[in-house]
Length: 215
Image (cartoon, rainbow, N blue to C red; front, side, top):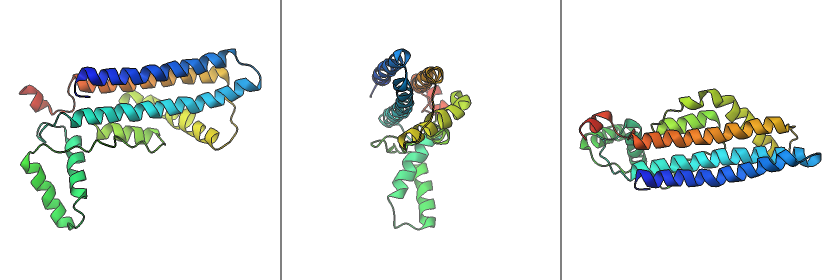
């Protein structure tokens, strides 16, 4: 993930197999009937959530690693990445008092070094990606989540809450019409996540504008 082309290929490849699997499930639901139809709709909702969280986790983690590999100076990075790097470094100094931590934080800022952005583990979606957590992760990476503002109810209830009920053995009735609507909503959200990340890569939104102006 060292070039824009490499991260774009990774995001597209991960989207492709997920889209294929989800379309396969939709095709089965369209021809099913009787008890099998309800069973497939329930299983399909769990699968839709799994692909939404799975794609978001991988795509956002890929972006984090991409930015980390730029090895930019603190003065060149947008503040969220500087904060991430410095807080991770300070957290390792467990014996420091609160005052010394504050002083150390200022020292790090003045050094204008190339901070190490912790990216090895990627982002943590906590296997429970609600809208608040999704937005928080995106903000922590300098990404604008406003495109998902109208999708909060869908994320939290149509996907996450429904997945949890199904996973815990509760019965919920999902019509094939509702499932198909949800299917296309999730595909659209995944594509939106990819587009937001690629826009940030292509326009170098991880860099401060002053750095861009100077080349």
